[in-house]
Length: 213
Image 1: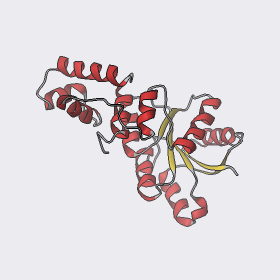
Image 2: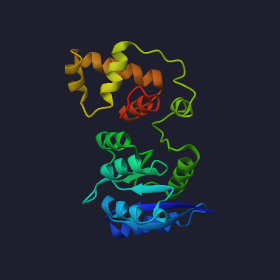
Image 3: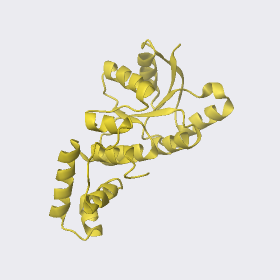
Image 4: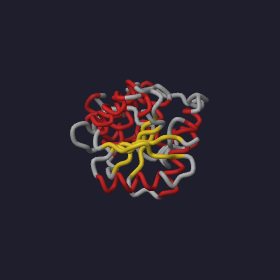
């Protein structure tokens, strides 16, 4: 039995290429493709047979973009795993997709082997972790807690604000602290949690329910 996948992307040639790639994987098959989230929502509403195990969704699409599509899936079809597949690698975009409920984020230039691994991990673990999500974060996702970390009140406040779309300077203003102090909190948390960037920090906060989207 193969796991079912749906590709949502408004670029037809790219969508077909992804479909062809996924169909070469032993444990996966593509049910169909859609050009945007609205078309996907219509397909889902038509019959339960159209609801897959995984949706690979682009971020920038007309009619209904990837963020809106992900929010819809998470709200109405909680058993469906959403993997963002995009050309965008900006932290802001990745943060928005993660907050919308995407369980993974890959760039479209990802190697075939990595895509297959990501799909398998999505089905096994419910999410796919990139290099930015370390073994420490994997433990927390698996339900083993936050590994005994203790945070100061300001660190928790900073972590929650880092999960929003505020810039570091705006966070400093909101906390009535200097940008240099905020940089110190950031660097300290990166070291403490063994993450390399803001995305890793956000995923830690979300998985440990420090921040709730």
